[in-house]
Length: 484
Image (tube, rainbow, N blue to C red; front, top):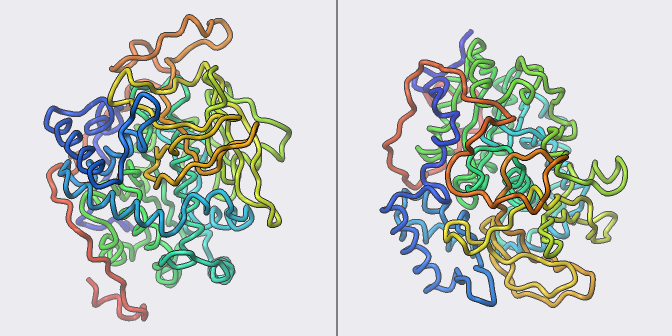
């Protein structure tokens, strides 16, 4: 039986899979009006003390990509964007998000990872990371155990303790996954950082009672993303909707504002593979949905070959496992341009800080002041004191502390990464590689050509973003019919 709500549009139009389509309102692709709003927003944030512009000696406190995300979320209205940006900066400081990611127990982190969307290790045709969420695996026994575990966590700020681990997962998305995907050669429009994710949400075999029991768990994630990680979602593909889903959708969509809701596409069975193939190469689609990727929730991310070619992972299988399943952030290892992945978090109460991987300099172009749209933020350099920590991922800049020799500073943040063009690693000299310029790559892409044509109506484009009045349905499932 078809579980697609009558008021919900089906697959997105084929052109939505093009890199050029998603670039509107992104770094390096602003209209004159958007550029003017961006300038005004930065001035306002600087005047109020929430943003520090770059100087000859120091990098900007926040990169342009982060600031522009807030503008996109508020339809490029500078005052509205500033209110959300300010609220997020205060919220981050109140909850000490820097320390949380640095010190979170790795077991707690991995436990949270098991009950929320997981990165497959793959990217779509535009270079955006693909996440998978198999809701059916979240049975009552698993969720009771997780709830009991999170209740023991201590929250510094006003946020509930159950949210602490969820914070760390969003930090991993913005500090580790997005910078990595930004830096890998071969994607279209490398001048624009990757700042969103693509999500496959599988709700097959989920009963009404299970949905009801999970409603608070799932609402936590949507509320957090909408409020403090705006515009990090490219789209969500919902697969396997049960017959009762049209009713459930009536209260699920109240968790999101209209623009976010427009990014959610509920696919019928026959639409799944054609739609996914228009966005994602068949090799990067999980097998259970008609692709070739051997991945399901609970497994380690399976890095594609292009990513592996750019990385040197330190140590053996245990190091790679922690690299892919534990808190990691990127730092600048020096003037050679290579990026170092620093493993953080705590093991048995002992804080971890160790190099777990290196992203080769051929794959990395640290953004410079050559373009105000790709202006970098401060980066942490091993063996040197850190300047005001970068905030590529809308994070409050905390006072810097001098690092001891050979020691990285924990509160620092990776810079925006401008990747190199698609290059044959075995034959090309580093000195031969130009820094990419604005515009699409002028050669065939290894990760696929234009998407398949799908004749479908476009999603809504003109809608007002309004403050969401989050709605919690009644606790008794028997009352669900009254929500229709």
